[in-house]
Picture 1 (cartoon, helix red, strand yellow):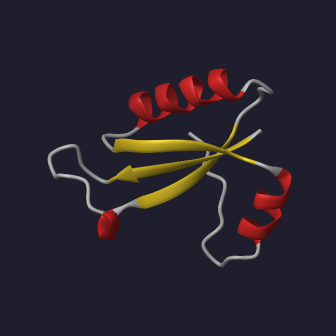
Picture 2 (cartoon, one colour; picture 1 turned 45 degrees about the vertical axis):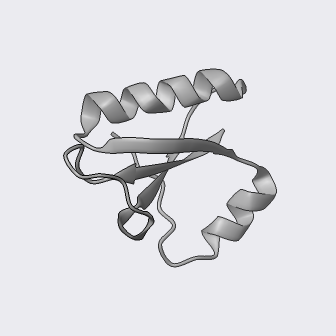
Amino acid sequence: MLFKVFYQETKKRSPKRETTHSLYLELDTTDVRQGVIQAREIMRDNTDCHVEFIDAISDAQAAYEKESAGFNITTF
């Protein structure tokens, strides 16, 4: 299942929409809740980013996102 993670590059700055970044994680789960927990743990263990929101991406959304130039699945 594909998840889109919205984050700030640092935990020291207040979140602002203009500075929010996103990345995509592909996780081996079919349970959305478990996937969100797993994605948050991966981000915590591998980055110093402040995670704002994690969203499960449907197949239709994934097809749309893949058309954008910035689409890249991140692996840690």
